[in-house]
Image (cartoon, rainbow, N blue to C red; front, top):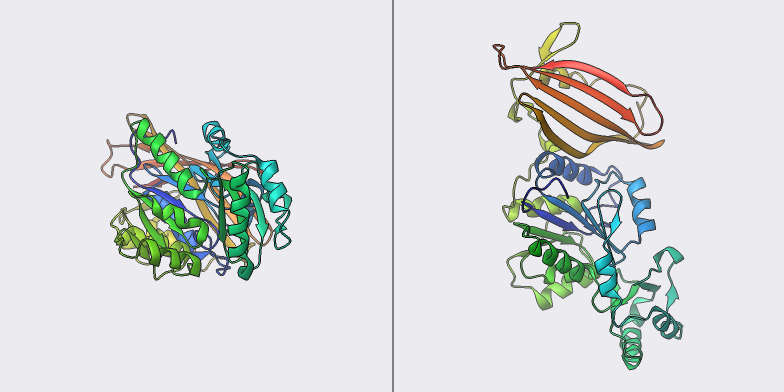
Length: 385
């Protein structure tokens, strides 16, 4: 978050499975639309937060499978773990807070007495989360009885049922909503509260996100019955929460526009390049050949390389820019490629040198690419007016 000089213009806090990530969209088109919008309009002055029920293990697995951006903050394990940045540095203060009135051994011992509950995989059992599967018809009775048992032990435990099968036991102070409230308090104490916050979800464990008073919220069109019921009972007349007509990431884009939180037209939706920010661009190849920048881009359409006939997606991540001189800018970003053969990342550096003493005021663009999987770096030069 070091790229922010002040308050974030927009902070998006989104669930992943069936909210940001559409598992019924094999082409990942809505996710890629959101990625392009975020990197082009928001990365520089806003914050992206992923809030997921997944453990770190399953979260990292999802990142390998889907073209996801790198968030500024990751909330995992149903709000029991908060980490920062690409290296996922844990928030020690949050961990200390969750230790209050929590004894994991007693929680496991009592829950194990219910034959209706079956443990989820070992990766989903965390320091402040114990997770089970339970049949839908048995969930309510088990939750009531188990809660009473834990209270007798002097524990303050929260039980969350979501997805029609998942039952999570957490410290009472944990949860997606509490983790978000903790972050908002932290930003406020630093004098940098986000100007606007948009929360996004589809299931029962996302309900707490919508209970934070100062946020806008979107339930994506494919939201599950349990979240819609919560909304009907608790927030039906709240104009700051909408039920989108679009699925997953497309619903998030829709909400940005609905609440007037900023631009919501993804560059991937722009069919007419003349409406782009630089309609008069000219590309000059090092050989001296000139052509319209738009003509150059259009020329790529009929071209096929070694990925012909294969599913192939490209997206950029972590775009940043800095002025390094009176007439020079350095732009950096990760270029990701995803195909049937897996994914790979290329670190890209672009040097822009303005030349105001020329009639065109053109800039020299120098690219340098370094592949993270051992391929040699490459340099390319071209001129843009």
